Image (cartoon, rainbow, N blue to C red; front, side, top):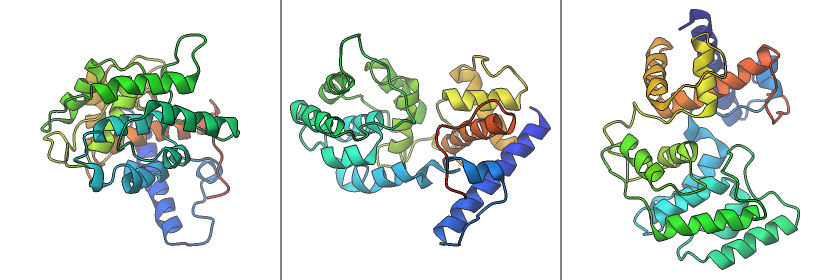
Length: 272
């Protein structure tokens, strides 16, 4: 690991979290002197503090639904869409009605409104299949055959979702679903709650930066997991669970992209 990169990661964590604290306290801007953090949108250090996750916690991930038979597939469906305005129109699927859900999504799209998040990428369907129809068709597979999740293990629950090979649900989306479920009765008692997370494309690039490798180097799950755990210790981030370390590595990569003139995040921010 490169010590200067670890120091920059620690700086990003401190500065981004301070922005959140000042914003929540309704302190007037500016909340930072960092020109990059003032100009572009970055997720919070802790995933649970992000706007979409906070909305999910109150509306779809609320404990009133934890024992509902559709709860796990609903979480998969929610993260596939990942846009609160759409999810609010759809409402929690007490009964899975694919025709109604498709009609609502088509109506939102026809009105020129956003249906999905721009943050998560899902597998595209075959040529000629509309995205809404593709997403609803795939949702049928996990609502009819939801995954069984071993309550003692975050990792094994993630593997269980992947093993079902739901077309729209790859390792990254599965990791996001598990990150939600660990805050429910399903996985709250998992042995690896603090120490396991799925490596995503952004966190892999963050690890490559910290290790001085080419950004396109292929970091597999096993290697990435070991490295994320090491970063958590070396950067003195033991107060964060590994999911938040993974999240932070992804945002740190975005920050360094701007700092080094390698690109810009998709979303700007009106002056933090």
